[in-house]
Each structure stands twice: as C-alpha cells, then as structure tokens.
Length: 391
Image (cartoon, rainbow, N blue to C red; front, top):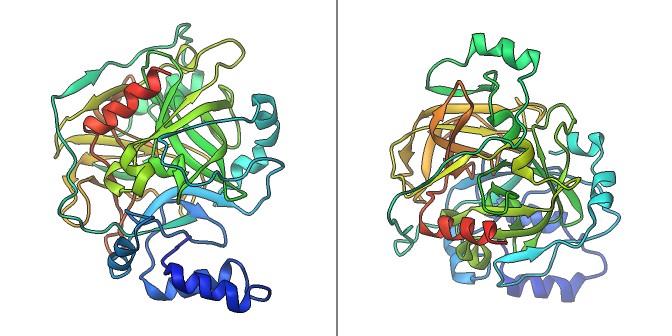
C-alpha cells in the first residue's frame, strides 16, 4: 500500500469529509498517481503499500516521491482475523507475540495459507550518508537435525537430476537436500489481512531462530501479528508443523525508518511438541561481511504470476552491487510476490542443500525486470542474529 501523502493533506481530508470519504481506496488512488508503480515482490490483494526508507520523516517522503519503484514480497489476502491487529508504531527493535500456538494452528488452514496475493513498496531514496558498515568476515556453519531421516523416495530420485550449474534465473528447486526443510513460508497478519513471505531456519544458540526480511516482521510502524513459520511448505501442507513466533525482531535502521539497506528480520519461534526447530529441520549456516560479487543461490516461495506459492523456487548466479539506490546485492532472478525473506546462500552445495546465508530477497525495480536485490549482511545483521539467538 503506498502511503505517499502529506500529513497536512490527510488531516484536512479527515476534517472536511470524514463521514463520506472512503477510508482507504481513494487515498491510495491519489498516492498511486503521485509516483510510478513498482514491480511487486510482495503481494496484497486490493491495496498497495508504499514503504519509504524513512517512513516517519516528511522530507524523506518528498524526496522519495520522485524516485522509481521497488518491490517486496509479503502476500496479503482480504480476510479479517478473529483476534489481533497490527501493533502501533514503536521505536523498539522487537515484538513479543501473544496469540497461542493452538489458536494460530487452527487459524492457518490450508486454504488460508494458499490464498496469499501482491504488496507494493515505494522506491528507496538515494542517501549518500547511508552506508552499510563492513567488519570482519564471520561464518556460522550449518547444522543437521538431531534425528536425521532418510530422504523420501522423491528426494532420492531427484539426486540423479540435480539442478544445472549456475546461473539460473528462476525455476523449481528439484535437488532435495537440507534447503527443502529449512526454507519455508512465513504467514502473518498485516492490518487485518493475512499475508505471506518466505524465511529460513538457521543455526542458532536457541535452536529456534528464523531469518527473513525486515518488512516481513514490521511494516509502516506496525509489527505483524499471528506470525508463523512453515518449513518445507508445499501445496498448502505443513510437513514439519506450523511454528509460532514468540518474538519478532529487525535491525534498528529498519524499525526506526524502514531503511531498505537494512531490510533484515528475524523470529524466535516457540518449541513445538517439546522440540526445537533446528532439531526437527536442521539449520543453515550464515556468513556476515562476506563481500560483493559472489556466486549465490536465492530461494523463496513466490506467489504472484507466473508462480503460485505452492513450491520452493530458486535462482542462482554471480551477484552485483546495486548501482542505483541501495547498497544491496543484485541477482538475475524472476521470483515474484511472496518471495521476500527467502534466503540467499554463498558456498551453497547442491548435493546437500546446505550453504551460508548471506542475504534475503528484499526488492526489485520496475524498470529493471527479472532482477532481485537483497541487503548486505554486515555488522548490523550480525547483531540482529546475535540478539535473536540469545533470546
């Protein structure tokens, strides 16, 4: 949903025509006419959301109105939830969940999980003062489940037909391996509507940490609610369960001003049936401060055409540094709505499906089709990871 309005105009609108003016759609139409439409990576049915790199700052909004567009990947369906609404704006970098796992498990039916659809975000502003600090490279190795099981017949048969070597601009992942368990879909409520992103289980001290995009945990000052992670999702099924978030977090830069350079989020999920997440599905490794121009693999669950969110999709190739409005990695990739928050790996092994997560799907420019961008995992992403795994 684009929110490229001036506060004074909005107050005057409410004073002069509060009873008769549509509360959402007309204003959105006005905002759409003020700026170019981005290519969507997140999806919202019936509304588009503009997210600036400084939502709370009028000057940043004015500068951003003249810029191009980017896309982010949560998917929204117009269904009212039985409980819980988007939280109020807060400077805090984390949010504690209150809805019980039993209630979330009942709410997130196969039908609701299937029905995610595309959410537009406004283009990032070019801010010369915005740089992503780079420190000493740090790698965290992947982990296997505590009780590893034999691959299914379909997974074993797929070993004979591993995906071709990079590059790959987008297609179903047929290689099996750990990524088919650690990657999954993220479902949550945003402004009273169901939504979807992607996420990944990672090695962590608490064994319950999921990495995703910042806008997949908080958007326009509101923390998402009814948040669950479904690893290994396919065709409306949750083969490893629906893991409810006990806490969601993001970087200080994203929570304060939604700076696209820091669009990284995390969730700490509660144990399920007495087990921890990575004991069940394993955890991918991570890499921080790994540099640019790397061979990477990106994964996610895009739900907008030509995809439908039913299966895991991947792209691969050598990344570039965004030459335009961010400090992000760029990768040739045609993933669409619903893929935001999906993991990007360096040192990815196609045979085992393991790697070192170094970014997430974040946005794309409308005028630069089939290219995905993801934030650089620098010191702030490392601090977020440390905060999450210490919970």
